[in-house]
Image 1 (cartoon, rainbow, N blue to C red):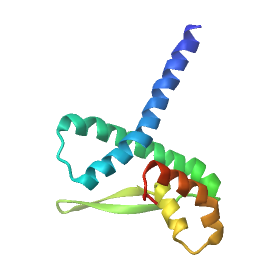
Image 2 (tube, rainbow, N blue to C red; image 1 turned 90 degrees about the horizontal axis):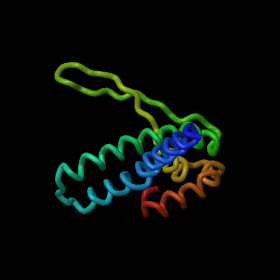
Image 3 (cartoon, helix red, strand yellow; image 1 turned 60 degrees about the vertical axis):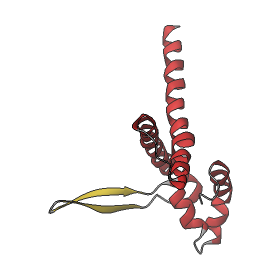
Length: 130
């Protein structure tokens, strides 16, 4: 019985982190950035923690559901970070909304139809995002 309760708590807290990251932090950061508000570190720390969690969840979502919806693997790239005189390579992961934008404004009508529902859903959460 105690195992069931612990798994339930684990599932509830994990879901709260993932859903909070996706549906709270990401739109909130964009709204605050659009308004150019100055806010203290007390607000910055939790928002950026949620943003990191949301970005990780978005990458996982894109790799699983995005692959299933669009019938293709997500594009991976390589970016270079310049630190003093050194260039450090790091991977660039395509987020789900980046993939939606690529297909929504692209030439393939088949991919536009596949992503139409998701474009509508994302724009309901954050208007004009795609």
